[in-house]
Length: 198
Image (tube, rainbow, N blue to C red; front, side):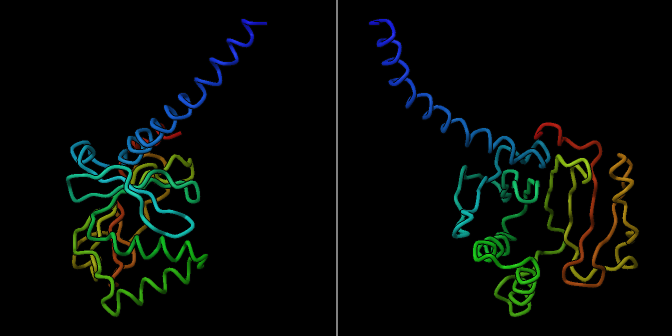
């Protein structure tokens, strides 16, 4: 009986320690996962953050030293995102609107209006963002370059989607939303590293 009581006491005493250890490890795991879309040399200096789903407020998991911010995999859409800090105001607004339960269209319209009025500045030409997915129906590793107002003629990039080819590991860059402030070049990186996030 004493042995059973002693074992129970040890379990009770160790349980808070185990829970604390698990909590301490979780941010490190999230940080390591969040920076996977980045080129190797940008990972160590990236800021890692999450948004509170109830308020849309940002919470820093790790303060970085370069101009990149990353978010761990979002269970809602399955994406891990990294992007230049100059686009943070757009992300902050989107997070707050999501917390208010706005629809995707309402969020897109609000961001477009904020950009039009100058409340949010458009991403500078050539700004990069990085996306990772472990979903088999999506491009695993995708780099995206913002090229506001660009057209196929101005930058020499096709508008023919390479999504299907990219899913087979043979994608090429293509231009989306040509001639608009949201024009961007999709750059599938093959092979992706999504297996590390499954």
